[in-house]
Length: 64
Image (tube, rainbow, N blue to C red; front, side, top):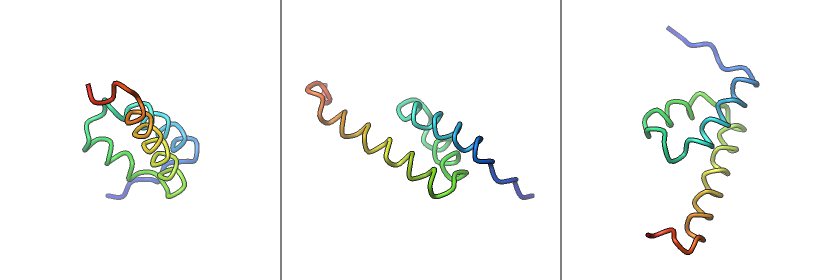
């Protein structure tokens, strides 16, 4: 059984969900949703993760 690719709008919505759920979504669920995205949308999520990590490390309280 094949699944229908997500529309552009569905991918845009999924990007928002993934970017706002970096800390809370279980890793396997995050990865499954990430794989539903095309390359451009995956890049958006990757950029968001990079910004999140940079901000966490840059915060004086990141390791507390």
